[in-house]
Amino acid sequence: MRSISEVKDYLKKYQVNDNDIIDILNRLKDLKLVDDNMLANLILESTINNHKGPNIFIQKVKQRKLDININEFVYEKDIEEEVIDKVIKKYLDNNKELPIKKQKEKIYTKLLRDGFSNDLISKCINKVTFLDNSYLSLEKDINKALFKYRNLDLKEKKEKVLSNLMRKGYSYSQIVSKINSIDNQD
Image (cartoon, rainbow, N blue to C red; front, side, top):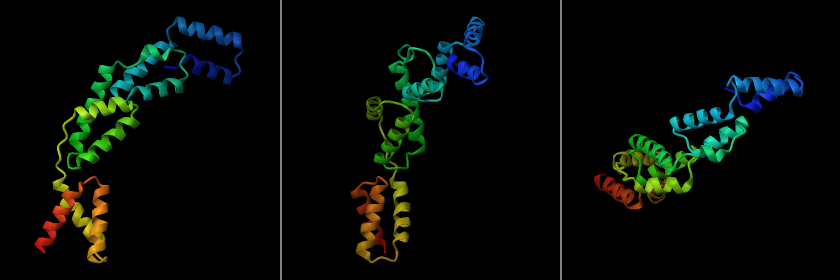
């Protein structure tokens, strides 16, 4: 479907006079081939089905230059929360090996990019119970970091490994205890 504005622009591009444009648009409206409200409903439905937020909907409406009252097409809060919960569940399943801090950060930035509001994202994330299976990947990440910094002296190597792993979201105590257990094995 095309918006009224898109049809006008198209007709103007081919130098159709203004009176003919009005007649053509009226005819298209009568045939229900051009309807901004129906197009807005389709965009809203598509946005919800693709797990995107209201800001993405507004962006698409502005991009298509729809002549509508956006407030009539606003997400209902329960639908928005339901969509956010689906996205969180999907991300939790795919990122459970990451530290909780990193899981929250990834989910938060994903939802923000997808057009949801800060407040609602925070509210939904705070309701979720996160599983910390990062201990499974911590040893692997420590070994990678130790290999990466193998040419440094012991003190500098530990500092680099510690800062590298803290950037990845692991807690200080987790890192130190795992490094100490590796040192004790050697």
